[in-house]
Structures are given as C-alpha cells and as structure tokens.
Image (cartoon, rainbow, N blue to C red; front, side, top):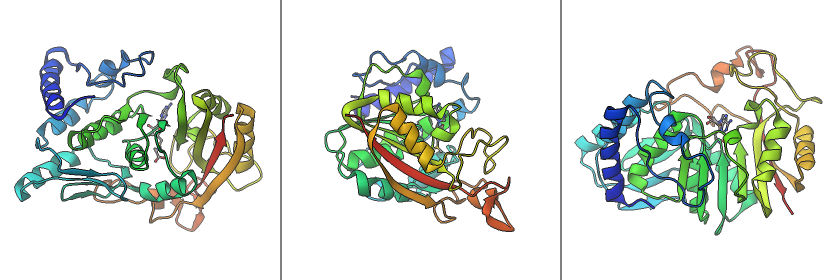
Length: 333
Ligand SMILES: C[S@@+](CC[C@H](N)C(=O)[O-])C[C@H]1O[C@@H](n2cnc3c(N)ncnc32)[C@H](O)[C@@H]1O
C-alpha cells in the first residue's frame, strides 16, 4: 500500500521519468495479482495510449498537495474533507476540470461538488438494495469507469475492489481522486477484460455497462463466471430491449458506435444460465431518465436527451427503443 507522502514523491519522480522517457514508471499494483499483465501499465499511462495524457498528468501534478481530514464513502457523493482556502479551491477546481468529461459520480472534494453526467448513486441504490453488504469481500469491477462504484462498495464493507477500464481518462480521474482519498483498497487499472487471466477469482464480479460493447456477449458472461469465486456472485448490468428479440444494431445505438447487442432480459438470463450461473435474479429494470443522465458543468457534451428522437422520445435518434437498463445477479455454486 502506498502512503500519502510516498505517493507524492512517486508522482514527482514520475514527472521526471515522463519527461526523460516519455512514459511513467507506474504507481503501484495490487500485490495479490502478480499474474495479471502489470507490464502494460507503463505503456498505457503514456502519450502512446492518448495524446492528452501529458495534459492530464500535469493537471494532477498541479493539484494542491493537501491531506484529507476525512473520507466518507457511504454518502451519495463520495467525499473527502479538505482544509483549503478559496484561492486553492479555485486552483483545484480548475485542474479537476482539465479531466473533463466527468461521467460517473458524484464526488465532493473539499468544497467542490463534481456533478457528473450520471447520477451513479441512483444505480448504486438499485444495486445495493438487493446485494446488501459487501463485508470482507474482494470484488472485481469490469469497466469500472473512474472507480465511483468501488468507493461505494468499500463504504458497504468490501475488503478490496479491483476495477479495470481501458479508457485512460477515467483511470486519470481515479488518480486525481486518489490524490485526496489515499486509499489503496480501490484500484482502477487500465486493462480490458480480455487481457486479464482467470488465475484469480473474486467474491463478486460486476460487469456494468460493458456487455453491449462486447462482440460476443456469451463469451463475456463466460469470463465473468470464470472470474467468480465458488460461492460468489456475478452481476451483469446492461442496456436491454423490451421487445421479443434481442437487438443487434447494424449502425449506431443512441449515437454510440460500438454497441453490438442489446439483449432481451430473457436472452440475458439464458446466457447467464449457459455460463453456469444459478439462482438468477433480475433485480432491476428501468428506463434511463433525463434526470439520471444529463449534461452538467462537469460534462458539457451532449447527453441522453440528444440521443432520442425529439418527436418521439420512446425512440433513439436511429429509431431503436430508447435506453432501458437491467441488472441481473447469478450465483456460482
Ligand atoms: C457505460 S460505461 C459503464 C461504467 C460503469 N461500470 C457504470 O456502470 O456506470 C462502460 C465502461 O466500460 C469500459 N469498457 C469498454 N470496453 C471494455 C473492455 N473490453 N474491458 C473492460 N472495460 C471496458 C469503457 O471504457 C467504459 O468506461
């Protein structure tokens, strides 16, 4: 685990390393995952992966060095208490804004409320009302975004949450949050699910908002099953259609390019059964509202409302059924 002063120094060294070698020596790695591809970190945290990396990196470095008095993980906005002057708060807000767009949250860093595109706290409420406690559990969160749900799971008692997400900006947002939270029980590693081996299993494996981005949904659910500990649970949250057949969009879905399949709940449940899960429960099905997903000062690009047909908001701009999401839990016995 990295302590507060050490992380500061590591960031300092990384700045030097970055300018010398155009890549950083990376941070840290969960000690209990030696067989995962750690060698990919340095390559991913570099401008080879994203041209904006230097800008994001400098923004995090320029954030005020200030330890948190307290970190609170069981509130809708996960937050830390900071003792910053108005001027320093303005500097921090400006640097955090360099990591725009902030999609998953909300967060509260000192006096700064990061009002993200998504009310992820609402998804958390739908999830946690059925999953209950995470006491002592090790969790894998596939496609974890910036790690918001990891904080909530720690707040609900989890021992450790390993998140993976190939979108480098979200990994950098997590680094920014970690600068103040300093809690190395929540990881956001820049990896794709297909890159991780099945050598380690987890008490709970979550895949939320990922299935429809995978070309082969059965293969994805099989992997979730393989990564779940015996006696554990797999949780799949995805866009679904309420028609009789799963949708395989030929082009975009709600303006997203990389959507391969939007299943019916029945297909999703039968894929989970086929993977080996039992006791399958559909814990929630809901239509995404304009209150839950919207543009905000922290995500000023277009959002859900712009993806729907203005003349018939039951449809996307492409004419598909508008986004409905389902959450399904299965057990591995
Ligand atoms: C719709 S977001 C969902 C984020 C969060 N899990 C949630 O439910 O709000 C989907 C996330 O999956 C990530 N993702 C896409 N392909 C992935 C892959 N092959 N492996 C892991 N994550 C992936 C994306 O980068 C993105 O952050």
